Image 1 (cartoon, one colour):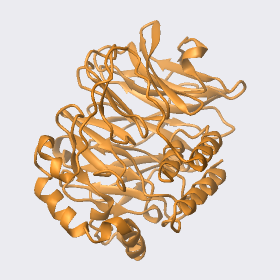
Image 2 (tube, rainbow, N blue to C red):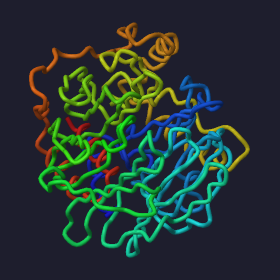
Image 3 (tube, rainbow, N blue to C red):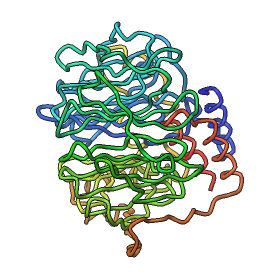
Length: 452
């Protein structure tokens, strides 16, 4: 599965008009997570070439390469680990050989020996950042919910686990840290399943939803911050996606997109909900998901909310940023980071710096793409000057203003963007190849999109 996905990615990168970059994957933004409390300035940005880490509230980022992340053996270039930041400011990530915890400065790593050679495909953390959940999905075994405290990071299996289901996503209810929702796939029928736990993963019971609502795949997108019985699913059917809102025993599709919904976020009170995709842009609802309007044309690769700000991963090559933030609900964004502005590898005496420094010159040259080389210094200066300015003042930085609202319907449909036939064919092939890997699809879409 991973080998096939990497082969497709490499082929698309070469067809896009340049040599494969670094690990053969096009540099793409994937996920952003934030610290809290005394570590509120900590931001970790997952990308297809490792992690970018900041300890100064996203004013600058340094690179942590895959060699350092996965030392001594890199599992492959198509590994996109689940990432969280705990109460001690450590970046945790789960992957095919367990969980690792990087110190706040990204110089020291703690490998958790109890999880060695056990695949941890997703992580979720409680709002106080003190309890971490994971899903163990080691092939050929029972599937488990894992639980650990940030005090000792001693992950333990909860309950008896489940058999016959390949787990994929996990989320925890902000209002009840013992309520979990888990998505997966029936290993026999290949039908999507959603499970619920009221006791921190000790028991997992099926959530009965109509098969027509779940499509080919169903992933837990988030849980309502006020009512633990309400949650959201992103489902895939063919090349498109739907957003499903579940309220107790009632479930309904509230939005559709022609391509994968790579971004989902909701406000602290649950009233404002966002979703986004590469082709469709950014949509927002201010009534809990009854009605969505399109608020931006920006290509969306991820979404996250922090204290009233909406953060988005974008198309760094053709858009204004790789990471941006908005203070007006997504109608405009201030660029936070372009990949060519990465300050370099982590700087310390640990293994991270030692293994990443030799690779940095090549990566730096790859990130200084031809259209940006001449204007790089000027653009960087402008971004530095406006980094802390409100997003309403970001027009000079290439801000994209929203089109007229779609209005009217409660289920927003996005017309497919025009693509070259080859890009569409490769996208379809990659979609099939990557069916069981929820995170690998973002990379497939990114490669095909850059063929336009």
